[in-house]
Length: 309
Image (cartoon, rainbow, N blue to C red; front, side):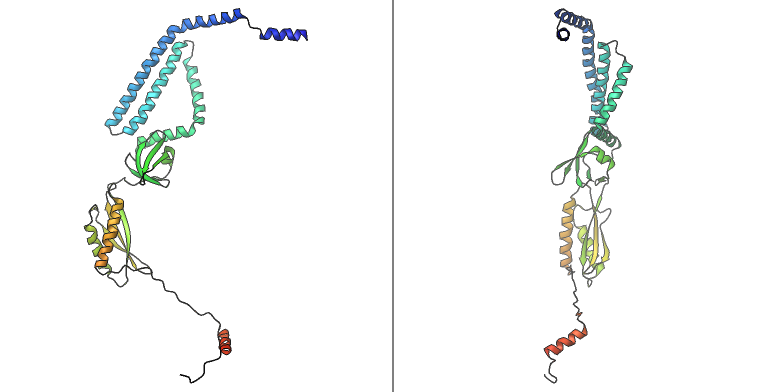
């Protein structure tokens, strides 16, 4: 037992001379590396400003082509890529024995691990870059995606921000925008709207269509090319359906034009005496009582006297 105690005491005993010698060795190495550290700090500072300059030039070049969003995202990526490259070079300055090939290999393995850990973030970032490069839609366009409808405010590296018509902000991941079905409402110069009106079967269809077209011609904000249409569309149970179509600018008064068309056409039809019928239902009641049961009821209640007035 005494031997074991001696061995344990020797294992945990600290030698001040060895500690001071170790510290002295570290200080010597730090002193030898001090010029390299200073040079590396100067170099990394220089690379930071160079990276910022390159990022600024990328943003400016994109802005001159009307691609501000792309310039912001891609400029930021280039800035950090250049700065990271400068940091790797600074490490080789501080540690001359460091093999750049080993550093790149280690960085590759680390990138794979980071890729698995941040798969969703990298996927959204790549989708954002592709959206900005291909430009299926731009800032200011109105889109419908995943049950959300609104105006695009900004396209960021991770997500796209849209403002809904009721004044809310929806943040949609770029990966969803790149893989899901997106309806771009403002993709073309004009947008068609439509509304159905029902007239009575006794009214003249041609006359009703002419009244509707004349009414649409007097409403402001409606496009004349393509011209509005009034088409007899279907024969329904209680009325003849006439479908009215008109075109407006994609950024024009969409809801306002619908309100104006509804009010104006209804007033014009009523003024011309054309009926806008309600839904009419005809109900037929049939007596399914068997004749034998009817005869029994008559016998019980008594048949009416013959010859009575």
